[in-house]
Picture 1 (cartoon, one colour):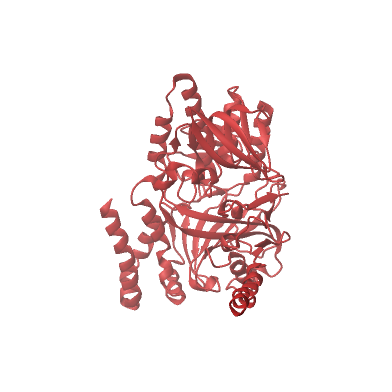
Picture 2: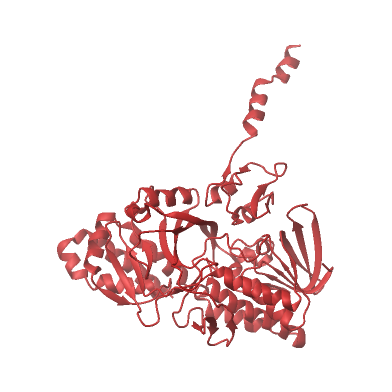
Length: 437
Length: 77
């Protein structure tokens, strides 16, 4: 390890690895730092789905020859591993009734294996000559006299090291340590924290292999709070012809134990018979701090990329894209002295949650949790046999659900006026928010 | 706070939560530096798999404070 680098990248996730790969390909000296020992292993809960809805975060991504192809940016990221094509996205009530969104042609989302993407990017970065420091935490980055001093800490010895660079990239995820030390952190608003636990389950007797499932209702967890999600995906060592495994997530507000909720769902929940013989092949967890986006993700020569600057997450695919664009901006700055403005304005335009009102809208999609299980069962019994065009998407799925349920509102008004009142109240408040924009 | 390394999945959530920077990943499992830890419980509230528990050292110290009566002794003498 040297004392001075052109660039230091903190965090070896999709964004960090993409930056390291691109900058090293342009013959810059790059140091990549991560707290993990094995960089490509994924211990954090992550759906890792290709959100194939056109114009997600200003970009359309699809699989071409088993690689990820970004239409507008024009880049290709190596994959070459099986992926799942989900054609349905369902909201499931405790009674087993559903509201289903379908896209048979392109799929509603394509779950892939993150580990493969990371492994490929890491290989390319190492081949380009990136210096990698594993088991090292990026503690702080400071702008000093036009350069950046990055403080690193070795996990084993706990000793601090200093590295100097022209520019530092904070790509250390949604709980970024680097960002908390920056001035721009003061501009963020904190909403709350969420903790997540997930199991990869094999040998599940599961009827929904073609669906992304979101469990709605209070009876899925012992406390009536939190969400359960289910998504089939392939393990990193899967071969052609292998069956996918099922990734089951439980997310709860901080303070409630996610793992307890997940264990309860698998052993005592309304769908426990699916998991009688299930074997856990992998466990993951994470904590999510909900902050508003960083509107101006560049402070001096420190660039905040990917989840570190986002509300919740940018998805794996957009982390790759923002990583690529940030690295191109940094190269432009090297040659012309300017370039980050373009990246900042693209970030503001393309990342939906930077727009006023979007966060409130997304949070309101959770509002149906106000209904009791029996009421949700009733509503979903009306939509059970229907299919609505849609995708797995935070930004548009809420609207599709609203249209689907409002399509039955006359019947609900007649049969269960008390439910109609709650629903109308819920969507009315969202309509008002839309007016405010 | 103490980590049960058998349960820990090494997601690293607690590392960046710790207000004292007392937590590190060693061999991809969480490790809490007992000298830096102030038993605030932030990490435990964030852990997705409940791998962190409190083996609190403070009650013993508290108990010592409650039972020892150095001032009383001085006052009596």
